[in-house]
Amino acid sequence: MKIFLDTADIDEIRRAAEAGLIDGVTTNPSLMAKVGGDRDPTELFLDICETVDGPVSAEVIAIDAEGMIEQGGRLAKIHDNIVIKVPLTEAGLRACRSLSNDGIRVNVTLCFSPTQAHLAAKAGAAYISPFIGRIEDISGDGMELISQIRMIYDNYDIETEILAASIRHPQHMVQALLIGADCGTLPPKVLYQLLKHPLTDRGLDGFLADWKSLGRDL
Ligand code: E4P
Image (cartoon, rainbow, N blue to C red):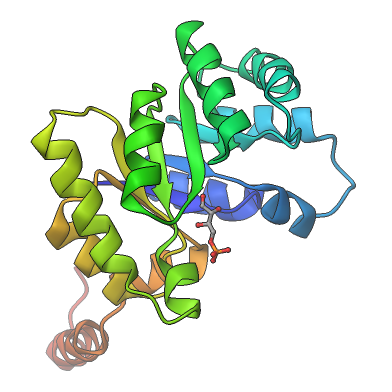
């Protein structure tokens, strides 16, 4: 399963990329707003693309298809790693069809139902982003949605990749791995939670203490 970092924070992206922990990055307008307006968005996307060797999702902000196609076309020219993110609306699917016909990879975002995921695939989406955490915020079952999409895509040999999004804690990731999502995107905090275990820390402390008692260097 590919792991994407869900942030526009270049320091976090550099740290995770240098550790070999991530296969790409996803951003959205809220994540861009979080890093502030000091940087030109085009330059920031380029910087991200040069930092991580994999897909980097950049989201359009137009809400009409023509606007999305125009913005998507411009964003795609920044770097080969750019994937255009469009919302799962009628205009978004029209833009998805047009951009993918032009050879541009599209990530259809804000997916909350299996039928939406099916339609995005038919529109040529390279990735579909179902938002697990936000479904649970309204007492729905985010993992059930991932399972249903997996089953539908497998039934019809659909190649669109399931990008489990809005992952809020490690158990979301475990479930997405077990279901067979193709990718998961996580905030930095959750990424590092995935690799921490108290028994690892305790075990390492014990090994180092025992070695110290040898009184020898290595
Ligand atoms: C996905 O592409 C989104 O950027 C993200 O996963 C949304 O997560 P949130 O619901 O925690 O904001």
